[in-house]
Structure formats: C-alpha cells, structure tokens
Length: 271
Image (cartoon, rainbow, N blue to C red; front, side):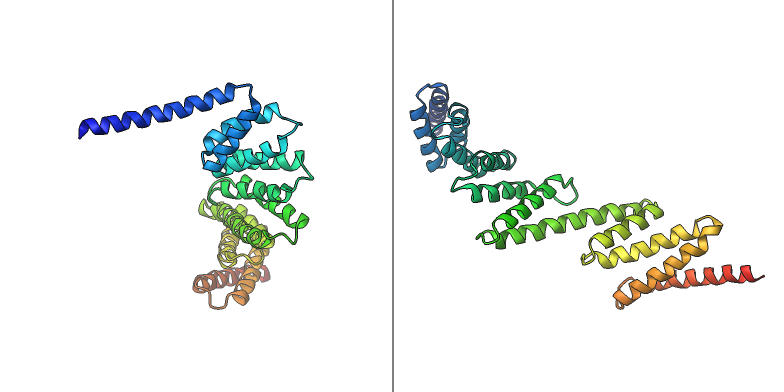
C-alpha cells in the first residue's frame, strides 16, 4: 500500500513539473501565436496562474498591435480570477486608458473599482484603498447611470461609506479615550457635521458632551463660563434628539453639574 502511494505521488510530481516546464518553454518561445492560443486555453481551463504568465509576456510583445486589446482584457480577467485584486485593479484601469472605445470599457471601469473594493481592509486599518474604490464607483455611476451594475455599486458604496464612518468615529472617540478632551470635542463635532445621519450619532453627541464638560472645568478661569454654556447647549441638542437614550441619566448629571457651576460663577460675579 505504501509503495502504491509513493508511485502515485511520484506521478503527480512529474506531471506538475512537466506542466511548469511546458509553461516556461512557452514563455521563452518566439512563437507568439502559439503562446496566445495556449494562454487563452489555460484561461478557459481555469489555469489562471499559467495564463497570467503568458498574457504578461504577450502584453509586452503585442503592445499597440493586433491582439493587444484581447491580451489586456484576458490578463485582467486572469488576475481577477486568481484574486490578485491589487494588480487586477491596475490592469483594468490601464485597459480603460488604452482602449477607451472597447466594448469592454464599461466592464473594465466597473471591475477596476470592484477590485479595489475587494482589496478594502477592515475599518480599523488604513482606508486609502476604500476611498479610492468609492471615488471610482462614483465616477462609474456618473458615466454609466443606466448600467446593470448600478444596484450592486450602490450596495458597495453604502458598505464602504459605513467603514469610513466607523473609522472616523473611532479616531474621534480615541481622543476621548486618551483624555485629550479638547481634541475629542473638536473631532466629534467635525464627525457630526460631516456625517449628520450616522448610526454613531448618539454616541458621538454623548462623548462630545462629556469631552466638552471635562474641557470646560479644566479651562482657564476666564473661559470656564463660556465653555460650560456650550455644554448646556450641547445637552439640550442631545436631549431633544435622543429622548430615550441609554446615556440620558449620565448626560443629565453632566447638565446638572454644568448648571450648578454656572450658577456659582454668576453668584460670585454679583458679590
């Protein structure tokens, strides 16, 4: 039984090496027609890594000549199928630039954005690629408003904008966590202005209220009154927006402390 297994393993190894050797010979070959036919055959058979090697080699030879459009299209599709989203995005974007009148240009523009969407990381990580994907999807929607892809594009946009909301909220809230209350107040206020309908609006308003209070009571004496009044105003906005908030009891304590501190300041000014 052990010997049979070794024989099978050897046969598989030889077959793999023979396949790799054949692809290597094709890459080095000067018979570009045979190379193109083999690349297409590999693609159709689902051997995308082999197809990629050949299409990449062919793209340099046929640049600006016959087959160049097909090669560029197949190359991008092979990269996509192999889940090399970073390179595929670049290839599809390059396709749009090189072949603006191609029948594939709409699909290529969509796939360039889609590949960046697929490369978009979790919201806790850098969101540069997410922003690039959003920009490209918006450009696609503007250019092809009747495209069959529009419903899914809108879904992708909603998902990625949600990531940006979470990322920006975590950055703003992060200032509160490290007790940098002035920075937290400013960042949370900016967040609320930029995302007025955010699902994190309640939390952002609450932590802005808390940050404002901490910032006010630790301010220079001549600034305390002005900043406490802002806290009172922020509480009024919070209370009117979220009457049943789970943070209401805590927010009311901050409001009461702020009003008491203001009353004490006013009493001192009258003496």
